[in-house]
Length: 148
Image (cartoon, rainbow, N blue to C red; front, side):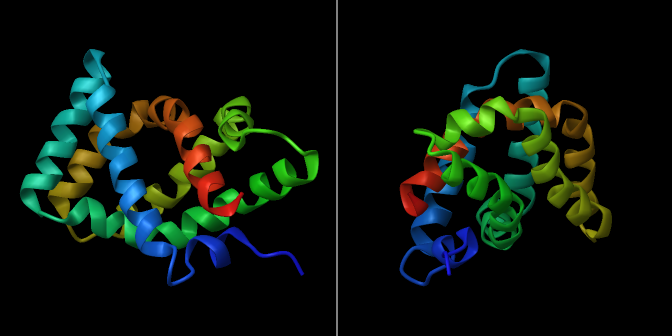
């Protein structure tokens, strides 16, 4: 039976590394953003980080299992197709993958009891799919680093 992304990425010896790399990926993506929507994301990120230090890392830890589940069908298709780069594979399906991943954060925002965090999320959500799509090559490379 093949090993799932969740089994691979959440293995006790791998999970802390994935979380560290995931947080670094987010920080790099936010740092690289520009324009009006990039400025909005930077403000939201700074607001959330100031409001609740450690919150971004906590969310990476919390969301990792769900993200692994959402990426699983894409990983299975990529693996079966014999492609070279999972990041390129995800980028070619950016609309579908972005919405799959954002469905997770949308659900968490819907039930969050942290109004400051929800307000910051709602401000950046309209442009979130574009930002997630831009990050997919790096997300794919991170996943492939551990699962490939």
